[in-house]
Image 1 (spheres, rainbow, N blue to C red):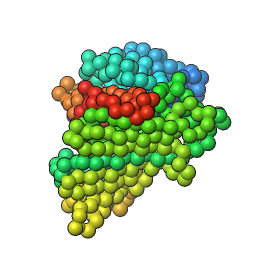
Image 2 (tube, one colour):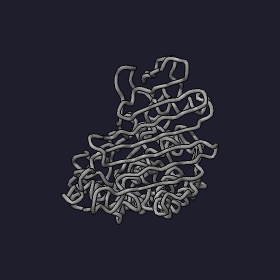
Image 3 (tube, helix red, strand yellow):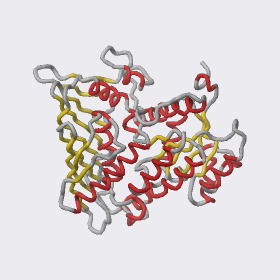
Image 4 (cartoon, rainbow, N blue to C red):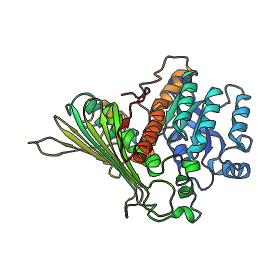
Length: 398
């Protein structure tokens, strides 16, 4: 079979961010090339031009396509012949820079895969979404936990009614790495995440609660109605929240909770979710991603394992697998599934075929806007002692 079917070539990728010392840039690169459908050919790897060019050999980016800024990258790539220039730009920078980079990329006609949160604030997110609407680019947001096979398995089970009416969703993301003020010790990752000028209005809730909320929305398809939130900063002197909990009222009458912490001793990246329906319930943990617990009163508890050949696996779950059961798949593969789904749309665009813009299996610009609205309303509710505020944005999708 030809690479990317009738496109008959790899998609050409540029990476913005991800220079020396970056964690998420290397993850984006690994995920993008995992299925041999893309090649990293260009980059602007740092806001520091010297560091950007010095980082290029780490990714095997040729010197003539190692750019000193995203502006230089976009201008130079536009001037290349169509059969050489990039197809998409992956943005792996702190979120206060996302808007200007993503908007410039979209206006230049390049597809985009952007880290989350999508922008610095809701106003930027809404403006960016309008720019995407006015273009024909594919725009994905890397809420990568939606790519886990058993998350997609559970989503299809729920949307097919196997759990009945969904009444309760409990989603948590618990970490402990900011138990002390690492931001005062020249810790780069901690510094920007706790700086309101760079992270935005929320700290922990902007960084990881957005994942927990997005996961619940993705798996259930329930539309939000209202939210009540309490945010707390426990580490003295820290400028943004490091713990919080929110209650969500869904439009079907169900309730959801979102709890996020970065100050819980011994916790690493413990994203977990439980979903209760009238016919059954499911439970999944990101740190044990190859198991999905399915429960129903009066029946033995079932543990679904990630096995594409098992009769209990549905199409969505099986298609997200790469290996037979018993060979663990995890973070890189889930991230790659977001890329793989976005690549399908990019190829349709390149071949002048119709492709879905809103109701995609991968998180898109609509989900990016909703994530920023979630952050804004959580901060506002907390400032009003947990007041109930609207949460259904016009771009919210099932």
